[in-house]
Amino acid sequence: MIISMKQNATKEEIEHVCERIREFGYKVHSIQGEQRVVIGAVGVGDVTACLESLEAAPGVESALRISAPYKFVSREFKKERTTIVADGVEIGGDEFVVMAGPCSVENEAQIMETAQRVAAAGAKVLRGGAFKPRTSPYDFQGLELEGLKLLAQAKQATGLAIITEVMSEQWVDQVAEYADIMQLGARNMQNFALLKALGKCKRPVLVKRGMSSTVKELLMSAEYITAHGNPNVMLCERGIRTFETATRNTCDISAVPLLNELTHLPVILDPSHATGKQSLVPALSRAAVAAGADGILVEVHPCPEKAMSDGAQSLTLDQFDALMKSLKAYVGLWKEARLAAALN
Ligand code: PEP
Ligand code: MN
Image (cartoon, rainbow, N blue to C red):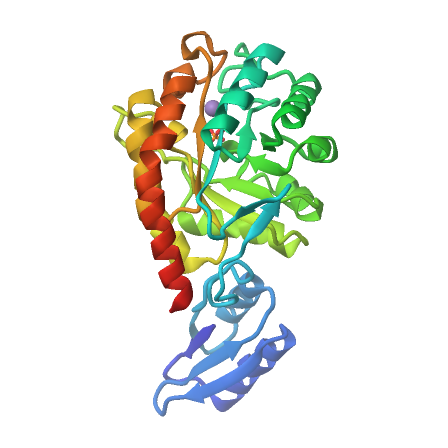
């Protein structure tokens, strides 16, 4: 924090401010300036409360936060990339990880066929929502526990790790019994009770960026989970709301390299929700590889036309096969870049 005193601030006022800073658990790092005194404060504490209190203190012109409000998830805190292992699948390491499956788990035949095919094509994680956050209360809400059981069956048959969404804190323990990765949906990115519950959970968490959230807010949500005890967090760019209506969302592709600068956590791109259009998914998947994401989360359905949710953005099984083949050359370059970066 930087606290600028008013030009005519008295010695007593300056000393009082320094005392208040120490009371909040910070160190007075430096006091500079002849005409106008500027005080630097460092440490860990309740920054917001401290800033507000200092702004009300006599003789203070302004009090500003200088470091990022997130700490544990920042690159400054940890330089090396975080790798997360979910049921043997390493995310954030030397392999580009593909997570694929339907938007919703619908029935046994649908999830089993999808799981077999995406596994054969090279995906390592099966996605599928058993709890669905739907804009309309009249839309399919998910199979809940039955959906989780079907995911377990698909895992048993294919060896794929499972990622599935948890929508409320009272379901965290139950979902954690079936999920290898807990998906926190875009609509719940700032559900603070759920963030705290995920902090206490032992499973890795994938945090999807809220559709109207900034990168900083995304990082703050990740910080919540980490600060509450769970460091295994990955971030997911899934498109944000803009004035553009030609696509379902606008993919903020620059968020991928930006997050790689700001945080050590793995970054995943969801090209399905980012575009809402099946035809755009392959190009966005290539963009994810090129931008340095650690993986993608893709919607795939045996018959998108009949999907109970998000059919328009779901690839068919054959299209997914083709996507995986077409990504190979790009992933080869991605690996070279990863290795080169690790050597530097
Ligand atoms: C999903 O992955 O199906 C989903 C609901 O995603 P989001 O939370 O990004 O809308
Ligand atoms: Mn979906």
